[in-house]
Length: 307
Image (tube, rainbow, N blue to C red; front, side, top):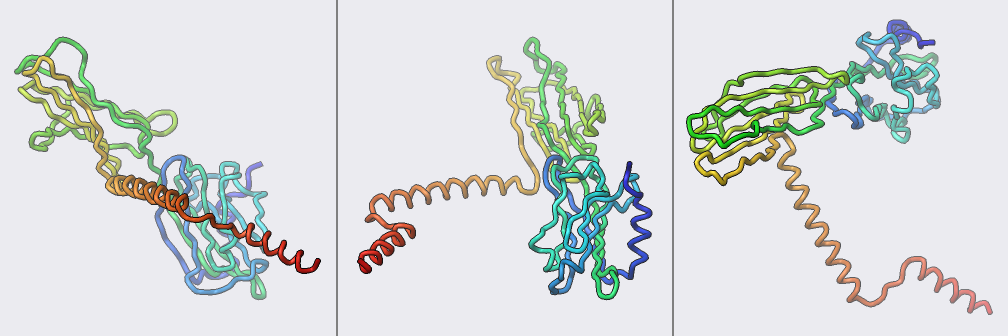
């Protein structure tokens, strides 16, 4: 039997008191990752967990079942939890008394894209609402890399038409696709464009570009994910005048954090060098006793004293 509707939950909670604080946030998460939905009491205060209730529910009325997670008087009670969220939600148990009521949602999927509401109640004489937070969860995906290619066949001559194709799958939300001339970074109009939403809700894109072969072909296909503010760019180049030349394709990630990846790689190398240096230093230094060795020696000395 399905748990009670979101409307009944909201009516029940609103009848218990007035909201004294309100948060409105938006969280962007990717498929398969963990999303943190923020709900933090704005004042420094220690809470007694036995006098606390925390309700997480879907607030947009998009599902017949709305219960995401509940904490009631010191205990978690998931008897009314929606089946979609079972074993996928966590509270920060060690932080509840400090006013951090945020929720971890594990293994995010497209069906988790909702507006969530956190409602916190504290008991004085009766339970009353002291805090509320609305969190809009947006889900995104870039689960594959675009592929840029040309039909196999005889070598093209200058002036002949060349057809290139760019394909991409498992993206969300619906991506934008652009063709560019890498010589001057001007836009190129695609010859065809097809976008399909697959059974899992993600999108697949297929586009073709017809251009006239000149001495050196340099084009790029860009897949843009606006929600992630991310561009996946595949570059293609070919020297038509050289019969021995081969086409080349490479991926260029143009997104926030792309440079951070390079920095991280350098940091890993430096950390490895530091570990190696420490290991060599330890080999050259005299033997050092561990804490357990020292304790054992001290215990032995004490036993000898009493003999």
